[in-house]
Image (cartoon, rainbow, N blue to C red; front, side, top):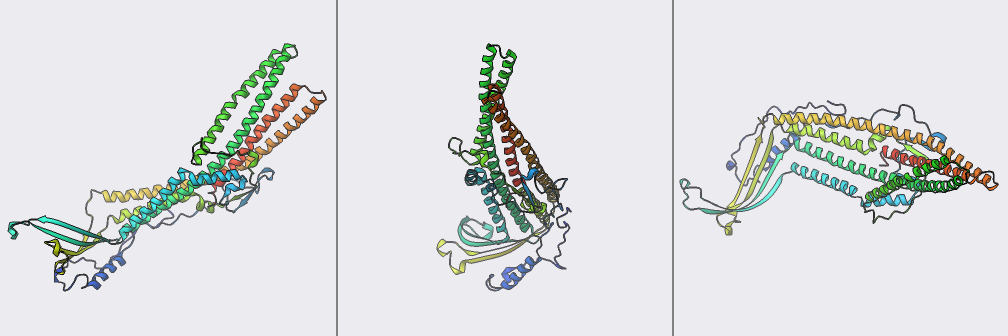
Amino acid sequence: MAPGLGSGKHTVDLGPSFQLHSFRFENFMGHPFNAHRGALTGIAALLVALGCKVGPTFTPPAPPKLAEYGATPLPGATEGDAQRFLKGQAVPAAWWTTFGSPELNRRVELALAHSPTMASAQAAVRRAREDVAVAGGAQYPSLDAQVGVSRTLPGVALGFFTPFTIYAATLNVSYTLDLFGGTRRRVEGLQAQADLRQWQLTGTYLSLTSNVTIATVQEASLGEQLQAAQAVVTLLEEQTALTGRQVEIGVKSQGDLLALQAQLAAARAALPPLAQQLEAVRNQLAVYLGGYTSETKLEPVALGGLTLPKDLPVSLPSQVVQRRPDIQAAQAQLHAATAQVGVATAALLPQLTLGGSYGPQALSNQNLFQPSNETWSLSAGLLQPLFHGGALRAQKRGAEAGLDQALADYRQTVLVAFANVSDALNAVRFDAQSMQAQVESERAAARSLELARAQYRIGAASYLQLLDATRSWQLARMGLIRARAASLSDTTALYAALGGGF
């Protein structure tokens, strides 16, 4: 049997003698629900006490004994001390507030309140809980009231020559004893399915908050990239026009003009894709927030208005196993598969059903509730499956195979989850290096622009040189915008990979 699960080998000891005797209740004196009540109660209590739960008992798998997520130990901080890694600390519950944007916080709240995806996941949880309640009802006796009328002719051989009508009003009781725990295993499996739905709801919550955050970062980044790209186009248009005039007077060659025209065309070609991406992100944000794009009001978010969290909590591997919704969902699925083996095993064993009815019967409805018309019956039935074409044993083998599959799926989920955390940590580390390089590039381009402006004011540099320096600074600024957006997005991905603040 797979590790983390109880043994699948179970025996049921019903004692040295376990027999069902057929009683002739008409030999009992007195009312059936009064006489021998103690004996019947004792028999039922004995049968319940003899009950057990066949099949393996579920035990949650032990978390991996790991100290690190990656091949190398995690440093205390990223390059340049941009972000510090706090090992062993939990992710805050409302982790998106660490970015310091009131508009982002508002968007997340709207998404959680109005997203159809959240509503669907919540409804799935409610339905799963009701399924548990339905199955749990089989653990108790059923009581039904029945009123009926029938017209019958038993036959001349029995002394009846004319049909007659019988009126009846009865209370019927039926109870199938859960001797081998099949019903309890079924309830256990459905409860595990309800846990699965609950963790899927948690996963939906985490995905939705992460997607809104990343989409907000992308919107701010694309908006600023589009502005910078438009500024580059404007500069190139001015530079091309000026070069054209210089070509006319013979100061510049036709080749210089053609090179600038090619750069201008390439810069203009970059604008539509950026604009299209920006609109697509806004459409997606509207979907996350549960509204139509034409009706969803989004306040602008500047990339500089999103603060990169200085301190990054990094939960321990054992904590991630407990907090990642996908891991816990896989564990719930494993629990359900374990219970299903018990259900299939119990289907091979005997089933004992007790029943009874009480109520009056009469030939006229006026006399139906006369004391002399009271009738009652008690019954007991034992069902032992003998031959079903091998279906029941195949069902048990299938359940055992399903358990093996669920265990393999659980292990795969844990492996993927830890790889996700390692990827997110590496992304944050390398983002810091990229950010530092882009900051240096933007600063150098800004200093070059300042120098070109100073030289232009004293006549030491041409206007074309000033335009070229300005264009270089805008391009460096676009690189810095992308690097900052990557750091914010990958920080969000790290929060999500660690399971959020649950």
